Image 1 (cartoon, rainbow, N blue to C red):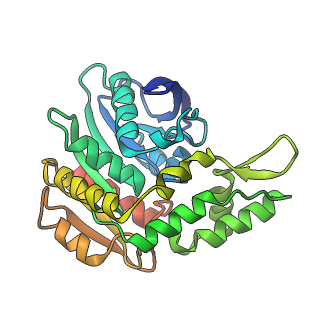
Image 2 (cartoon, rainbow, N blue to C red):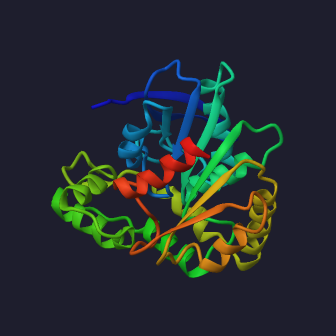
Length: 291
C-alpha cells in the first residue's frame, strides 16, 4: 500500500511566520499534481483513501490548513480567513509546482472555498477543480451550526468518548463502518499532556465565525460569487443530497454561471461526502482522468 511523506513549508501572515504541514503521495517527479484541501475542522488525513487511489496518476498533496492538524497556529486568530488560506496555498504551490507541473484541485467545504479563491485569480495554475459540497451561497443556520461546534472546548477522558462525540456531530457524513468512524475520529483527536483527549485545532478558529454580521456575510457572498464567475477551468460540483450547507438551488445556479460546473449528487449524505468509499472516489477519478 502506498505511503505518504510528511513535509512542511513556511508561510507568512501579518502577525509573523507559521508552518504548514502537508502529506505528499506518489512519485516526486510526476508532473501531474493534485492538491486536496479539507473542511474547516478536518485534516489532510481525510484524503488518505482518495490519495491512495490516485497516487499512480498524480502526485497528491494534502495540506493541513494553518491552525489544524500538524500545522502551526496563527498569532492573530482573526486572520483565520480565506485570504490567509489562499496566500498559504500560493506559498505551497510555489514549492510543489516549481517545474511547471499541471495542477488539479479537490476541495471539501472550506477547501473548496479556498479553491474558488485561487482559481479565480489571473494567471492561476488550476486546470481542473472539484468542489465538494460547497458554493458561494452558504446557509446562515448551517454556518452558525459550524461556528457553534468549533467553539465547543471539550475534553474527553478516553479516546472512545471522543470518538463517540465525533461520530455524533458528523452524522451528516452518511453511513460508515465502525472502522471508518474510528479513522474519522482518530484523525482529529489527540491526547493532551494530562491524558485527556481533545480536538486537533486552535480554538481561535471560532473567532472569525463569531464576528460575522449579516452585512459582512452578504458582502462575503457577493465576493464569492464574483470569484466563482471568474473561474475558467473545468469544474465538478459534488453535493450531498441532504446537505444543509449547499442548497440544490445554489448548486443548480452554479451549473449555469461561471465555469458551469458539472453537478453530481450523492444520495443519503449531507455535508459533506467523505470520499472514503469507492463509489465516491470513482466520481472524482472519472472527472480528473477522463474530462
